[in-house]
View (cartoon, helix red, strand yellow):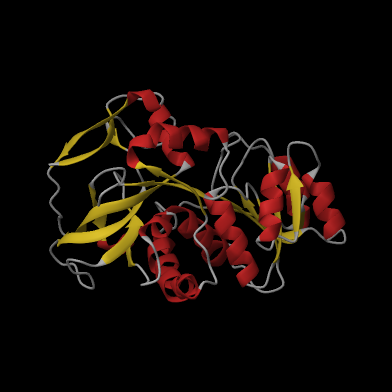
Length: 325
């Protein structure tokens, strides 16, 4: 039997229970992974609250993890028992998890389980947004919302590695200062200043070519006003409200609105995962990319991790570890 953090009903962290979740046997195309560490995401706070589309209770929490392969399902190639792996897998806040082999990646020898657990959701989302959907290239001006999030902090590193100018937003000045230490060219506190005025000032009145929208309703107008002619807005989140309204005069500036979800896009499997493995993983191995782990907590402190995410006190990723593994 395997134990994990399970919620039988929606609510806050108080509804979570560490209990047996059954015997896990890998099916066709799956790996059974003994979990060493698991990243915590904002989406999980919404899942637990019952506001995440397509998720029903009961639910075993967790969306990503790192660990060691204990069993291999039918048809799986490229993985064997004993391999160190990491990837997206629902139910990762547990002692073990079933991971689809197509979502699993081999850990570089130099990578720790903690760092690996902070990569799959945030980095894959950012890579899909900038490389696959946004088509970012050297010389582009990129605006990244919520740089303190796991996706935002990853997008900053990706944009700079592609040779882009990178402006970032956050709700706190200390997060902007941390982002500048990691290469951000400009930072804007969207709570107390005009992002669009700052962007236009810092780009000579031209605006940005790509904007990563993750806040939604609260900052949408500022984002639209920050765009250059033929700019692309890549939308992948709604932490500040889901209802976004805009004037059709964006057509006069030829702005493209590009929505995305790595959970449903066929391009995620055909383009994002292969290019991430080929191009991004070597950068983690040589230190060019860093897994932005802010806080490491024991798996028993899942409630504390959710509170940190809700309070937005972190910069990067909060990771839970199974002690004694």
